[in-house]
Image: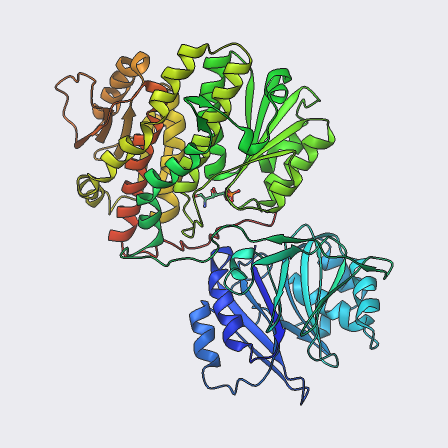
Length: 606
Ligand code: AGP
């Protein structure tokens, strides 16, 4: 996935493009570029380089900033390595193009149009620019339509035609583009967060609608060339970012924000001591009539689904599956009108999750999305949406989005249990008594961050690590392992501790770091004996254990006591401890905690 911006208006655009690209770097940050078009002279300026937007800013610093129309791009490499040549924009003849998506048939297009000699990069995007230029005879709409007919895959194309200064053209299929205007001009971007400071209303460019951004208006044309209306929406949430505050990295700031944002996600859904989802408009019959629940999500969002699964099966005695969204539709899942699909996504733009949701809905499933970004593609695709109140999550490693997803899921499950008769008044009261403790219990862990920092210091040189637990502890550790590996690059594997002895324990040697989480009363004894199995083979075990559990006198490299809650709520304190562990290992290794190598915050390619 990549970040795209475009501006055309009264003022010089270079700095606006750079500032907006910086806000989109979470979508990809291995190279960046921009192109400006001077309406008076027709002069094109193209600047692009491998590296961050800050490197691009340096490249532009001595340019005369006279152009008032331009496009920009920050890249997460899909086709072609990280290089100046492969950075966007790509120019072929009179066409300048930036693109987010994947053109699956780009190699066929190279052969079909015999483009080999024209291409300088290894990207699919340059192929599209070449085809556009091939068809361009002075009419941008004609060239765009003829080109798009050949494209297979997902795309957000933002185009400048050199002899049409001041106008930016755009067309999309699946990959997102939003647009807005103000008194200074019109702008577009991959995500509202890049528009937030300049506009208070925005529109989503509809698929296969050719959009023209002029200096003072936005024009839309349907596939037949007929003008069509733009549907504007309010930007009614805070898209601006108040920076890192006093924290060195966004990840730490976002970990520390969790008690507050969990409260915010909860408070609008607990009214007079009862779970009330009217703010989400979810009718009870949806929760009452479904016969099975299926989660489609990726990464951390999928791990939130696993925690919910443990809950739904135990509380509701109902079958629930949790599917990797990227695998879902290829596994021929059993989905029908009695299925309730939960699409969980922080960004609401993860294409694997979006496509899985579309597939399930086509099969008749009802859908509820748990989303952090309002108006996002998955939110728009779903029958109902529960918005979390995590606020903008900037660090690539998801933390506060995960725990607020859990809160939303716990509330949804609680309501489901009530309407299906699995909860009586007393059950709901006890359930909520635990749920409302989560912010304080997490806060207790966050206040002991230095104890976790000390544990982290002993892991800095590890190349491999294991995280072991059973039941809900295992689901918690799948997320803990993802956190550690994605920000510290230590190859970390979460393992059901009872399964270790069936092969993987062969990897345990002297001082192999093992993090064990023990929070489930009925599994504690078995988990402790599994821990002894790895200790007897030399493992160095860090134990994270519910503080109320009695422990034998076994030797541990370290013990961290987790504030006690009812077993099924222990995911909250345990996650806070595991997030801090990953954060401190990464920070003490001197890595870029917020932007780990090879990653991006939003994955809008399949
Ligand atoms: C989380 O730390 C990762 N960055 C990644 O797994 C992420 O959770 C996943 O890509 C899903 O993103 P989404 O929640 O925006 O759909």
